[in-house]
Length: 128
Image 1 (cartoon, rainbow, N blue to C red):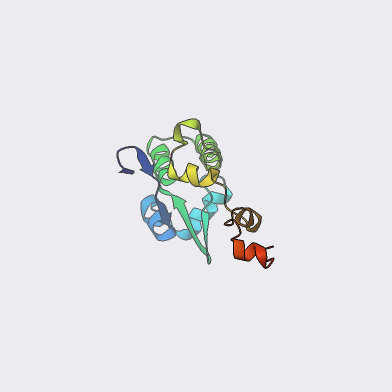
Image 2: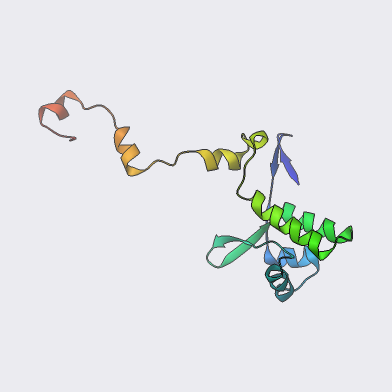
């Protein structure tokens, strides 16, 4: 896993052909194992493109290398997929956590943050 500034891990997204190489599986085997809950679901990138977090692929490969049972791998898949949506306190400064916790401005919040009316604008009733 790459590291930025020796503190922030970067979890690369691997496209399907790379996942096929990493696992040694064909496309159909990957999706068959997803249905059996033996491999994590892909993340949709839009436009029909999908990818998997590199750490998930590595963790699942390591479990297989270690000889874990299908039941153990199913439990690992559930854990890995649940971690996608949770952010713990230790990673609060991670760029993904910052982005997830930031307020995205809406039209109403942008309207509230407009510049004060100028004297000219107030005199002609503009900016209301």
